[in-house]
Image (cartoon, rainbow, N blue to C red):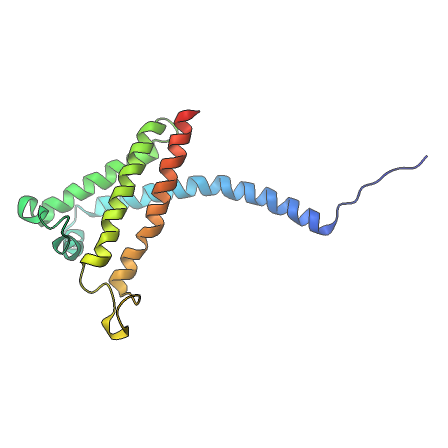
Length: 169
């Protein structure tokens, strides 16, 4: 009687381990991405109620053709508070995904709009590019602060798509 033994090559074992690790990482990453986005929205939204943050966003709002009209209407602190309420509400809407995927989809779509708005500041706010280095694509600290919103925009787009998929289930 012959016994048939199968041996798994080292490469196949490594692949199996990577697949298992990748599946766990993806499961963790889904939650880290969504709730990381929520944390950022809640935290920064909460900061909008401080004079420090209201003044910090002033150069962006003042120089924006889309938002500059808001200061004469609401004032610096009032507009900052409106943004804060909006960011907090959007963060809470996205966080509601396990219970209310439709609400999360709407919040995610609103976040897409918000981050497109903040990314517009790259071209409307003076000083986002370093003239001494030839201007675009050399970005200043201000520009670096804004360019990170590309990742938040991507997270919002993903969150929207994932929440819509959950609605269909």
